[in-house]
Image (tube, rainbow, N blue to C red; front, side, top):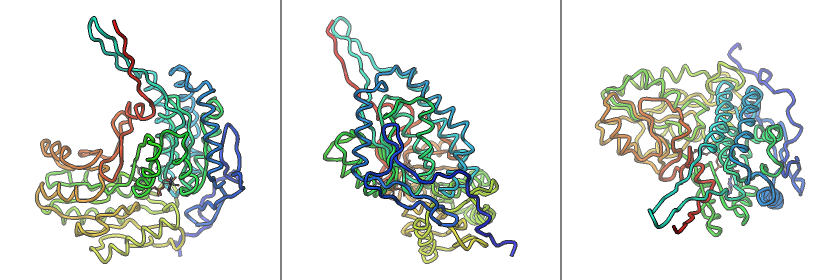
Amino acid sequence: TPNQASLSERHVPADLPERIQHYINGEFVDSLDGSTFDVLEPVSNETYVQAAAGKKADIDRAVEAARKAFTEGPWPKMLPRERSRVLHRIADIVETRGDRLAELESFDSGLPISQALGQARRAAENFRFFADLIVAQSDDTFKVPGRQINYVNRKPIGVAGLITPWNTPFMLESWKLGPALATGNTVVLKPAEFTPLSASLWAGIFEEAELPAGVFNLVNGIGEDAGDALVKHPDVPLISFTGESKTGQLIFANAAPYLKGLSMELGGKSPAIVFDDADLDGAVDACIFGVFSLNGERCTAGSRILVQRSIYDEFVEKYAAQAKRVKVGYPHDPKTEVGALVHPEHFEKVMSYVEIGKSEAKLAAGGGRPEGFEFGNFVAPTVFVDVPPTARIFQEEIFGPVVAITPFDTEEEALELANNTKYGLAAYVWTNDLKRAHNFAQAVESGMVWLNSNNVRDLRTPFGGVKASGLGHEGGYRSIDFYTDQQAVHINL
Ligand code: NAD
């Protein structure tokens, strides 16, 4: 039938690598024990490549290279302006390769191509931003007249361990690589095992930008092996981690004996609160984008929508109708708004929540595979309404195109519902009452709030969550703080 999708219509990029290797001390290498793991693409769920499966011995090699580049190489001692030039070159190269990057990312992760392209641009901007910030960096100086002058020495810390998830992998890697490198550290990156393809491009980009060998090292592999060895390596004094809260807890414990510096960007179940005086159509549009963009695999997804009762029925009706119009399709199709979820394991998890939801609340849109897609990890945008706050689909991070809508009566009740999960990453508030918007932002338990606006970031602002959503902040000079030591120097006058 014309509606029936077929695997032969999917896009397979030309010139895929024959295998994905580690990159250590300026060279592509396999695992010392030769082991590999399968990498699947999410439309066919077929294995398209083998990636080197790093173990402790491979991490040891990478950390050794990074340590040598830190203690003996030029990178940490270079002037900020010199490092900044390299970072700007990296940004230029990422920009010029945006189309190819997006093509590979979309193929490997299932993200819609139009959104993967946006993420590639953000990756370039992350490098450009920290390239600019590091030359503008100033540090405190204090004077006690006639007694003392005191100032701050800022120093790179050493080998930074960077562990990243599979949602928007290239962009999230750049969010850590940019500031870690700008501040003069050397790094070992352990990207997510579901999506190693785009990370394999960093090596070529960095070589072309003339980053010295050994400054950037990449070890692929399973979290419990390669990631674990990086966290437990005594010569890696800081770990920047983005991933699930459960994994964050484990890493926190594993890093404790070494008293490592930790930055934790974890899960979320962020509320979007829509008051009855809001611009209703604007709120509907933003709440659609907020949970269905990036396939719903977005840490800051507005996956719980709380709607004031007087506009609840109207909101639900408009929202469900619009959710049904969201275009699910092949990731490579520029018209696609929701692609394929990253991996069959994750697909099963999201589908199991769809089934749980059916027993907990009322289904208003979606609820399974989209029509025509009998293969791959496709999920129709799914809307549950009248969701009680005790429901698992209200409390737990689903990380897919599934949203829970719940009514409220008063502002107090909205706040109570908004804060009623273990997470606290983002919140979105829709109201035309200026005072209420600001007071609600102050009271809501979240690291970030967007008032009457879509999720658009300003890289100077703190990024991070409260409660189970994270520890510490990155963004702007806070990233510089995380990746550097600050030493106070005192001089008697
Ligand atoms: P995950 O925790 O399963 O994996 C993240 C990374 O940690 C992967 O590279 C994995 O290999 C590694 N890892 C797993 N176990 C490890 C261990 N024991 N020791 C060391 N490393 C280990 O997360 P995921 O499923 O890849 O990503 C989705 C999650 O990430 C969601 O919860 C999402 O909300 C969160 N996330 C948060 C942010 C944020 O900025 N707050 C951004 C994106 C994603």
